[in-house]
Length: 387
Image (tube, rainbow, N blue to C red; front, top):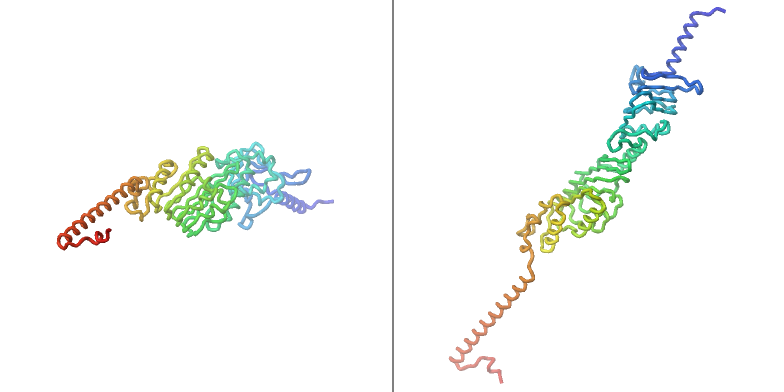
């Protein structure tokens, strides 16, 4: 039987084309067919999106996929800066051999969770960055990041970002709700997070949410400067006051401050924070400066001068007479308080003046009656009535 050379060439062409098409092997990889299960195995020193699209002639071919089931990285630096998961829908295992792991565990790496059950010994894979995740389990860190990202979606108008995130679940979230014309505190907040909430430059008038909404237990940094808050009475009834780190109340409409509640809070916080600082800001409020208020407020400010950031700028309100606009710490108590001894002196002076006037009246009456008697012989009216 003669072999047709043309048929042989065609057969060889199709064989080569089929092998190339089925393996689709990038430059930095060795691609083989596992004889036991006929699955494609790639062994790569590096792998990026450009490697996967090395033979793409147009943009429509950018989302190609590969039937690779086993992927091994050898003598490589693993950073996974790009999402590779969608290119390997049939992938069953990923293995690292003599690789340097250099992973940044943030939102951009969340795609790696799709390979959680595929990476061999994934519990040994650690984060390199950011600093607070250094040497932490990559899966635990990424789950923290994912949970935080989902929690932040409850806020419609505010911006939410991570300040610090620790592997012991101690996540610090910054929520910025400034300049939104809010009239009350937000009702929904992310859970499982220590919250830094900035509500500056709004129109908030009361702080009821602090005493009624359990979500605020996690708000330890609260900025309420330049609002319309007139009273802090809700703080006195709340557990929140015993948990805060920073409370900024500058530029509101406060006339009185719950000194006893804040003093107790300072003591409780000092014991619970174990050396970590906390701070209260109260300036630019029209405070009352009557006798009792000034006494207690001066004592409170002097005792906690280190904890009150703007103690030298806390002033009396514009309706406080001679003390209007004066620093509370500089108010002379004699200008607002009347000492009990001064009251006694004033009463004695009134009594003396009264007695003096009675004496003058009596003497004047006697002289008048004597003059009338000498001139007319008529006795005073009272004398005629005596027996």
